Every structure is written in C-alpha cells, then in structure tokens.
Amino acid sequence: MLPAVEDAWREFPGEDLTTSALPEVAGWISIYEEMASVLRSVIARAEGSSEGEELHRNLNWIEQRLAVWRDRHAELAGVVIDHKDHSLTYGGKSLPLTRREADLLDFLLRHPRRPFTSKQLATLAWQNSRLSDAQVRTYIMRLRSRLRAVGLGEVITVVRNRGYGIASLGRTATDE
Image (cartoon, rainbow, N blue to C red; front, side, top):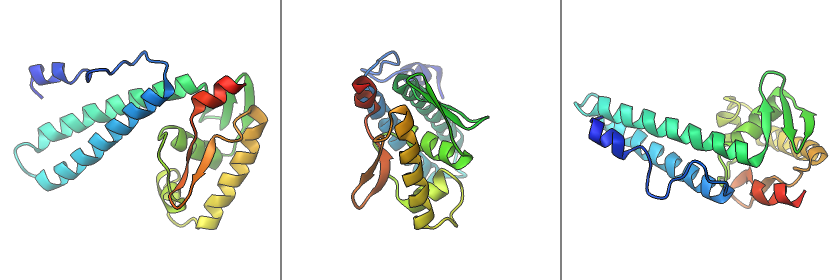
C-alpha cells in the first residue's frame, strides 16, 4: 500500500475508537466485516495477478481494524471471557463455562447484530460441521439458562428464520 493511501486508511469519516455507543461500535463491525468479505472475493478473482499482494495487505489492514472494533465492543459490553479457564465475568459476577459455551458466546459477541444458523455456528464458532442442529440448540438453551445467573439471560436471541444472535448489550447492562 502506498504511504499516502495508508494514511487515508487510518480512519473513515466519523470513525471514533473512543465511542461508548454500542450500536455505533456494532455498526463499524458490520462495515468492516462486509469490506473484508467483498475484498476476499476480489482477491479470489485476482489471485496470481500483479495487484494480489496489495489486495492482501489491504485485507490484512481491514481484519486488524475489525479486531480493534470487536475488542472495543467486548470492552464496552463489560463481558470478559477468559479462554484459559473458560469463565465469564460480567457485572462483577463470574460464571464457569464449558469450552464450547465460552467459544460460542465469544463468537456471538464478536459478531453483534448478525444472526447465525445452527450449521454456521457449528462451523464458525467450533470448527465442527458434524454437530447437528439439535446439538447446537441444546448448547444455546443451556448457555442462555446459565447466563441468567449473571444478568445476561436475554442476551442470546433467536431471529426467526435466520438463526441466533446477540441482543444489544448496552440496554442489558444499563438495566442492572
């Protein structure tokens, strides 16, 4: 990427990493996810061309920016998942989770405002496409039940005919 282009890519107009508005943060996550998706398809078509290397650099930058916004979302939501001991901390309360529950919740939190089907969750959150829809539903129901203990019982939502997602954590956190 040329230095002038790299400078222009530092931030988009209105992009503010210090914002405390969860819907705005979720919006930036959606924007960067869409940009990454489009760029991946462009890269697939351009593989082997002279611009392939530059496209990969741009994708790397977009993915890094996406990671920053996902981290900001987790910070604002106040939900901390410890991957080492598979536990969740929220609102000063701690909850032990199974590895699959921690992975599922972390995946959903990193993709706010996006519903995922059972098959997508099995593949994307757990890298296990062999899990049945019924098994994923069981994990979702059990996790939702367990999250009630820390005040997050309604955070995992069902979007009719689309799948499971994360509700606005900003509203949940201020209700406490």
